[in-house]
Length: 113
Length: 114
Image 1 (cartoon, helix red, strand yellow):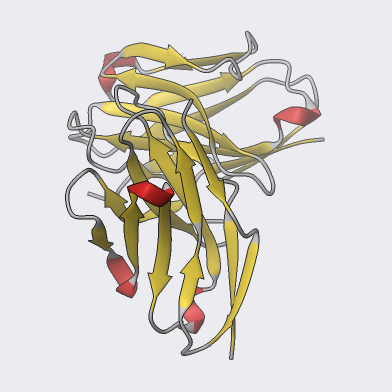
Image 2 (image 1 turned 90 degrees about the vertical axis):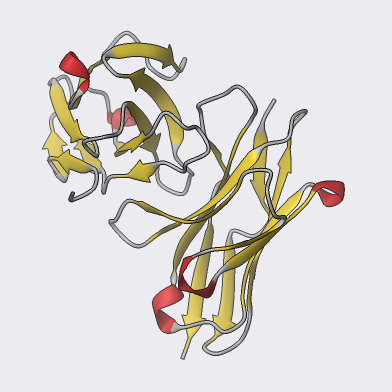
C-alpha cells in the first residue's frame, strides 16, 4: 500500500540558512511524488512534482527535491530560507494506476528572523 | 481563469443540521476530487469524479455524505445530520486527464459543527 511519512512535524531555521524537510515513501510501484505548501487558512499550492523523469526536481520559490529510490526518499530543500517560507509543507504520493493522493502528516516550517 | 473556487469559505452549523459545499474547478479540468483535512493531519481522499461520473469513494465517505457533479462542471458535497467529528477543512481539487499533472487545490471550506 502507498504510504508517505514526513519525518519531522516541526522544523525551525534561521532566515538565510538552508531548509531540509524530509519525506519517505513506501510503495511497490514507482510512484509520482509531490510537495505542497499550505499557508494558514489557505489551500494547498503545488511546489514541485516527480513523475519518473529527472531525479532532481526544481520547483517554485527556489525549492528542490531529489528522488532517491534506494532510500525511498523525496526530501525537500532550499538553499536559503525566507520569512515568507514559513508555512506547513506536505509530501504526497500517488501509486501507479491510482488517482488518489496519499499525504504525509505535514511539517510546519518556522523561520526565525 | 481564477483557479479552483470553493464556497463558502467558512460554515458553522449546529449538530444534526445538513450542510452543502460547492466547488467550481478550473474550466478545462475534467477530473475533480474532494479531500478532508482535520487539524494536524494531511488531507485524506474522499471521492473523485471524471466528468459527471463518480468513479471512486473512500470508506471515509459514510452514507451521510453525498457528492454530485451534474453536467461535469461544478460539484457539491452534502453532509446530512452533521456530527462534531465532521468538523474539518473540506478541500476540492481538479486536474486534467493526464495523471502526471499535480492537482490544483481550492482554498477549502472550513466546517465547524457546534
